[in-house]
Structures are given as structure tokens and as C-alpha cells.
Image (cartoon, rainbow, N blue to C red; front, side, top):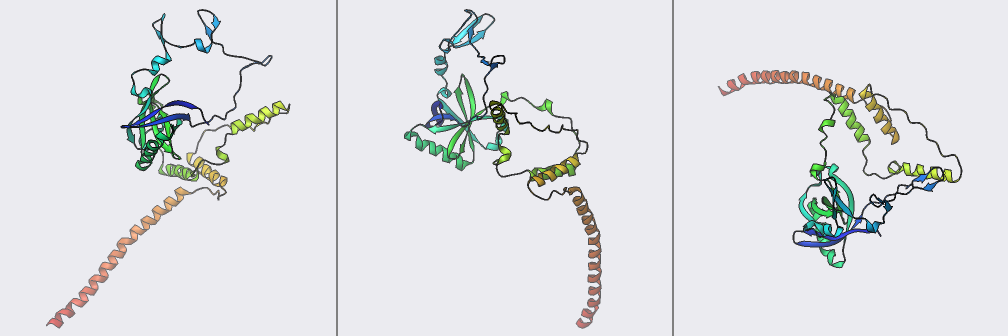
Amino acid sequence: MPRTIWSGAISFGLVTVPIHVVSAREDHSIQFHQVHLEDMGRVRNRKICELEDREVSSAEIGKGYQWGKDTIIPVLDEELREMPLPTAKAIEIEAFVPLDSIDPIQIGDGYYLEPDGQVAAKPYTLLRQALERSSKVAVAKYAWSGRERLGLLRVRDNVIVLHAMRWADEIRDPSELRPDDVELTEDEIAEAEHLIERLTRDDLEGDDFTDRYTEAVEQLIDAKRENCEPPTATEPDAPGQIVDLMAALQESVAKAKASRGEDATVHEMPKKRAAAKKTAKKTAKKTPAKKAAAKKTTTKKTAKKAPARKRHSA
């Protein structure tokens, strides 16, 4: 069972949902210690008081704010918890918005929200079903670790998830990173779209989405533990400069097809488009001729029949 990170409540108008917050993620990466290479002794980070020149325990350590050059103002954890903020003990829902209205760059770590006991089950389920039916996400504010944060609430597998978010002023403006304007042909864009189609899939399951790095580290450790030669990797080809963008796109499409067991024939989209244009021109030329012939036939028939009608009338 994951450890509870924070306990409080979701404030949804006048509805209160007591919850526990637990991490939604697990870290499976291999952890290393810092060691002295000469004798493999552990190297540890010790916390030293610079005034007393001695190591201090965690119980002796608190928070302090640097004010000016020589003044430090102590701030206790209890004082931070007791600040007069509604978000200090609750996740306050401020608005509901479509998910695609939020830039993914603002969305951070996710946490599962667990209802705190049976009394919270009904309001928790109410909020969950309301979110699902509205097809929206909730934007909330909450205070953790000494600061007020922005959060996003959504539903995953019948559980409410809280995502930490960045405030808008915490996102850097990327405009200065944009390259200068370049010209692309419609065929190049179409071929890139075709490559996207070839690489599109319904899920992220399978061998392509496994942590190969961790597997390689495990093999390295096993080899060294058994005094064996560690496995070696083939040197990857150095990325070259792209001279013909269209040729690179077509080759990429062919490789994507081959990886899926499809016919790896290079996609000839530009030729097909050219052929389509020629066909359209031919059709356009023939159309007036047909209309002219139709007009002549109609005129002739009408001219012949008209006198007959007059004689019959007389």
C-alpha cells in the first residue's frame, strides 16, 4: 500500500470530500551510492553547522529565510501549517475547463486521491461521476511544502487524480528559441503526415516502451558480480546532415512499414498528386466539348420540330 503523502479534503462548492494523497508513480531505476574508488568506502553527505563546526541531527534542523547579508529569520513548520489560507488544509476547486485548454507543459507529477473512510465515499463518487459526465477537468489550488500550488483533477480508472501544475508565470516564453522561417513544399508536409500515420498506434504497450537502460545496467552489474566481461554495445551511426528532406522522409516511411511487416516500398505521394492534377486538367478540357455538343443537339431537334407544330396548328 503506498504511503500517504498528505491528508486533507477536496472543497467542491459547499461539498467537502476528505481524502488521502498517495503517489501515483513508482521509480524502478537502479540507485547507486557514492563511494571512495580507492577502497570502496561509502561517501556520505554530512550536515555541518558552519558556526559550531559540527555535524547536527535532523531534529536540530529547521527553516530560515535570508534577510539581508547577516540576518536569518527562522520559520517553523507549525507556522507554515497554521497560515490563514483556505488551501492550507484543502484542495480548493476554482473552475472546470476542457482538458485540451491546458498546455501539457504546465502539468507535472500525478497523485491518487483516496477517500478518507466510508463517510467520504459518496461525495467522492459524486465528484468523480460529475467529472466523467462533464468531460472536463477541475482546476484547483492547494498549499504543500511551504507554497501555494495550482492543480488539475481528473479521473483515471474510477479514481480521482491530482496533477501538480505550474503557474502561468513559471513557464518560460519559447519565442526566442524558434528558428527563422523556412519554406516547405506541400509534398514534404504530406510525406511527414504519412510518416506520422505509419507510426500511429492505439497504446504504448509492448517491447518498444520498456526501460532498456535499466535492463542494461542490471546486466552490467550481474556481469561484474560474476567477474565476467560486461556486454558491449554496437556503436550507433553518427547522425548526418540531411541534404534531401523528401528522400529522408520516404526512407523513414519505408523503415516504419518494414518494422510492422508491411511492404516497404517507398511512398510515391508526389507522383500520385501530379497524376491527379493531369487527370483533372483533361476532365476540365472535355467538359466544354460535351456541353457544346449537347447544345447543338438540342438546338437542331428544337428547330426541326417547331415548324411541324405550327403547320399542325394551322
